[in-house]
Image (cartoon, rainbow, N blue to C red):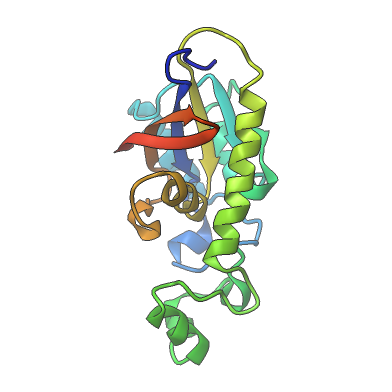
Length: 205
C-alpha cells in the first residue's frame, strides 16, 4: 500500500454530483439531499469521457449525494463512509441562497469577514477543518495496515467544503483556492513523512 521510499499514495478527491439545491445556489450542508436527475446524467457523461481514474480503495461522506455519486462513478467498489466528512453546518443560512439572504445583517457580516466568522448557529471554518482532518486521519489509519506492494490510488467522494478543508490543511493554498464545481475535483500525491501527511503535485480533474 505504502511506497517504501516515500510512503506515498495518489488521492482522487471528487465533489459529489449536482442536487436541486446546488443548481439553485443554496447553502446545502446538513440537509441530506439526493442527486438530481440532471446531476446523475452529468456524472455518467463525465464518466464516459474517462476523466476519472481507476481507484483501488474508495471512501466517501455518508450523505446521500456522495454515496450516490460513488455508486455511479465506481459501481464495483463499496465506499467506506467517513462520518466526519459531512458538509459544513451552515446554521441559519441552510437552504437559502444569496438573494434570500440579502439584507440579513448576519450574512453581510459573514461576507465582510471573507468567510472567517462562524455561521450563525452553525460551524466555524476552524471547527469544520478540524472535523474533516479527524476523518482524514481515520482514513489513513484504515489504509496503513494494508501491506500490499506498489503505489495505490484512493478515491474520496465528498462535498466541496470537505475538499477545501482537507487541501487547505495539507496543501499549499488557501481555503477558497480549492473550490470546484459538482462532479469535479483534484488528483494529488500524498506523502506521509514523520507521521504528518503532505499533499503535493496537485492537478484539477
